[in-house]
Length: 263
Image 1 (cartoon, one colour):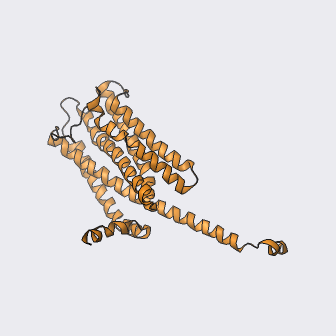
Image 2 (cartoon, helix red, strand yellow):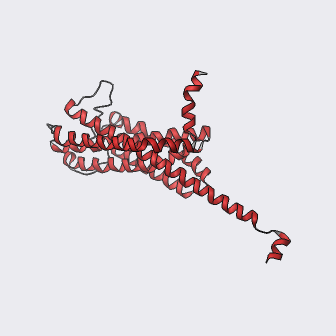
Image 3 (cartoon, rainbow, N blue to C red):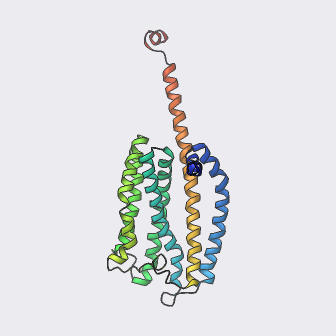
């Protein structure tokens, strides 16, 4: 009984009305905290953190690139979990979550690719190489585009949700490939220096600004995701109201002899 009581609030959030009410209360606070963290993180990254002894000032691109890359993968993880919940429990809010996260994840992935190219030019002498890590992240970006294209290409909302959920779950194979590509293949991309078994290998003066920026990016995703989910709920409500209006008008339309007499 205690276990059921503890998870009851989670199920309550699956109610669109309760979700909208909670989001309306917490989003302004989360948005304010996000702005504060970005201000602190950017100040630490550009005015406190020292230049790298090898990369010099170009290392500061890392404070945007690395959190964007982390969020690109995390967003897809959210889509996969939401898709699983939609296929298993058939709850529309899980589908709303998956749909809302896709464009946000695509933007983070594009930001990771762009900043990575800008970082790669002074380090590797070129903006792009068909490196295992870079190529797998590019595939992730195409997956995001594919999910959005499939969603928009199917008129039936329920069918679109199921198809994109299956596609999202199949696409999760790219996540471990991105994570371990630098370990499985000989790549130009440096190996993991923060999320590793032996602990971070970078100096605290660089690590702390990076962690603050990562937290700021994470909160930014939460805020954008909640707002996008709220917009999607409202859109579906409008569609439902329009369909009811059309059905009501069709039911009121005279049928048979009555219609002929009216004409």
